[in-house]
Image (spheres, rainbow, N blue to C red):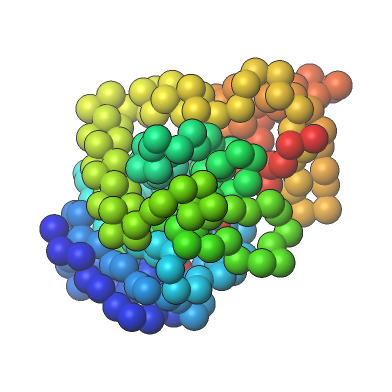
Length: 227
Ligand code: BTN
């Protein structure tokens, strides 16, 4: 496993996809000190100043190419474990929260028959002006970028092995232990549509289950916030 390090990249996911296409093996990682075109979920940008973690890991397994949603949950678990003893939690699908504010995000893409798992962790600072509450590890105690990188890579390896050995059911169980409590009020935004409801679990395929006045809805994509 090689860690490819850069001072600056547009996006570590782009470089990891390039390496994947060139045949880089499972576990190779791309790290940049900052990004000029960091990407988030749903076409958003990921503001990427120095001091935070930007890493993209190449993941290969037979049949993994169609598994991005499952692997994004695997990565969320890895980050929650990596920031211990801080009590992080998960917001569907794979935002990592500390005290209700976002501290990390995951973007899984595929190229060259591999998955590229991009992880951004606010280590030193939370970018200002975001449309949601955000925080950084440094606001919760002493932290070290290299130690966070090592812990994220170890966590990803651990949960990847769990997923390979036991399938998504094991990932789902672990996610639910670190996710919202049943009945927590949530608002799901999908484009112009906002749906209010209560957390009713996660389906066997990773869909969010939202209890609404009209019954339980299965949500496959969207933004979730607390009500
Ligand atoms: C999100 O929460 O919207 C996902 C954010 C993912 C950001 C990371 S930073 C490393 C990798 N490179 C990118 O361009 N995006 C991911």
